Amino acid sequence: MKGSSASHSRPEKENMDNVSAAPPRRRSSADDDADAVDTPRQSLRALWTEAGGSSELPAAASHEADRLHHRRTNGRGRGHSKDGPGGRRESPSRRHRGRNRRRGRTERVAKQVWLAAFAALGTAFVISVHVILYRALFASGGDSDSGGEDGIDPGQRPGKPRQAAKRKQRTLAPEDEEARMTLDEARRHRLASLDDRAVDRDQYTVRINTWRRDEQLLLSLNHHASCDGVKEVQVVWCDSENDPPESVTRHSSGKVRVERHEVNSLNERFKVLVDPPTLGILSLDDDVLRPCAALDAAFLRWTRHPDRMVGFDARTVVAVDVGGEERTFDGTTPSSTWKYGYMSTTEKSNGYAMTLPRAAFLHRDYLDLYTMALPREMYRFVAENLECEDVAMSFFVSSLTGGKVPLLADYWAVKSMVKLYSDAKISGGKNHKAIRDGCVDRFAGLLGLKEDGPRPLHPGRLLHAGDAFFQYGAQPEPWETIEEAEVDSPRMRERLRAMQEVRGLSQEERIKWLTAQK
Picture (cartoon, rainbow, N blue to C red):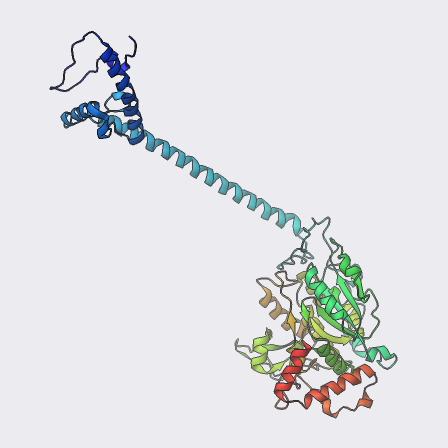
């Protein structure tokens, strides 16, 4: 019949005492009109049920809403519930089953998510184990000469991914496996004189040790090449896997030369492949800067004592007695072992026993003597561990000079340092302190510098009771008593006059002068 509704075409079975089905009757046009009204109501009721989980309609839904409400009221307590979609009632057990099904689906999805997460973690763990095994088996090669990457973080060249190693880089050249001179022969060697050439009392050569820190290297080159006292800057390049950048090889100053080494070892910083144009060598790390005036003052001090190292960084030795008690090193009282003393310990004791060649002047001949005459046990240790070349050189020079401690630059020059920050380190690691302790004790014994050795090391005093702005370290330079006639270089005579003028300034005026230099 036209306009008939599904809900009117078949009777609904009701389980209620006070409700019965109406007898059938002939349909009229009024019935058709009622059907036309009830049909949207039926649709609205279904939508309302789906959206709200209830078949209850707003009050404006007329008598059908009242009838449904009447059914709901009379059905309480008999196991009936709200009408479900399509007008059918849902029992509590059916609703419970529906909630269980939804909860079950949620739990299954959550379980799948957790399983996927655990699978991803397990995969990552397996990959990490394989990477570690690969590095242990192939990167180190199981060779005792593989110290090039052990315990260090050399970093990565900025803007350029590190290339995969095609072969393991050597840490010891064949010609350096055996010493070519004895220590006694090295002690008898006469250093080349500074009086033979005017340049040797006027300028010096900078040798910069670097490793994959091109930004710091370029800053260092730009600064040191601008100093009038610098004759040439030699870059010790031990990275055979990467070429030096063009900004280094073609530096605008024209003073820079790259010395390329096939061996990756801290010993190489003292191995000369390109002959320096001067006898005075300033050994530097690539992240240390000081004003040109500070370098000139230290160079002038070195020209007056060319057989000694003149450094900027003092370190001491901690003496350990047989019972394990630590005490200040005095160079005379016998001790069981020596340990490395860091800067805090050095300043606290007001004494020092070595200087670090990360910033130090020394004679060019000492570079060759280090390579040829240093005891091979020390040389191999430095090569294999990338550690302690600074301790080795300082102790080596002291052993060649009868146990004399290195000299230091003026206090103001020492404190004028600017340290360039870098995450990448040339040496270091979790065992850094223990390794350096062992270096100090063993190297001192091999070179005869212990208290009971043939050439005991004599510690120096850091600060003196006089002018603390200048007097620092052993044999401080008496600038005010030096005659200009004693200085051959016109440029160095000018530096001497500047030092003498600063000596006459007040402390406040000195600070202003030093600030201007930096």
